[in-house]
Amino acid sequence: MNDEMDENTALMLKLKNGDRAAFDELYIRFNKKVYNYVYRMAGNKETAEDITQEVFVKMYVSAKHYEPTGKFTTWLFTIATNTIINEHRKDKRTTSLEAEPSVDAEQFTENRIIFNEMEQDLLNSIKNLPENQKTVIVLRSYEGMDYDEIAKVINNTTKAVKSLLNRARKRLSNEYKKSDM
Image 1 (cartoon, helix red, strand yellow):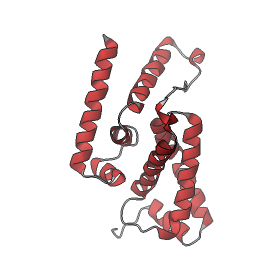
Image 2 (cartoon, one colour):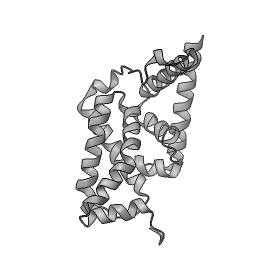
Image 3 (tube, rainbow, N blue to C red):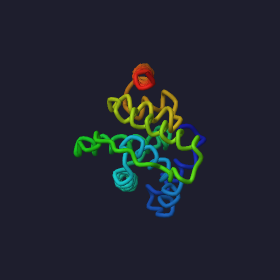
Image 4 (cartoon, helix red, strand yellow):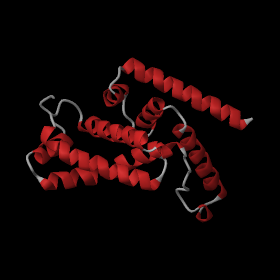
């Protein structure tokens, strides 16, 4: 890692040395981001809450082995991705994706209702992608990670990430075209 250590890495190193306040700060900074990522991958609120908590437990337990060889966020999202994959293996229910409305539709205009339906359709389509395609599309589109970061998270090459992303986008586009007809 270069001389300019980012704040998150510095906090993680403090946690490694037993600073509980550093964990609290990292939790505050990343709880919502991890939850949103997990929710988009898992598809329901309860599972997302459980997995998010598990990710932070793993982060805390793994702190003693943490080495700042890359970006902290890449390390954290690798833990999240692996936890999601392990949960998916344990519980095949994640393929039965019942969408929960994210807002009370009666409170918003017709345009907002339509947008929510479209958003939910997109999330359902994403959830039906193969696991590796779903992971790259969520990390790229929702978490804003670049190709190199995603490659580190999924332990693959940048070229493979681009290929997976391209296949995922084509698949989503084809599904959209079918439903639009």
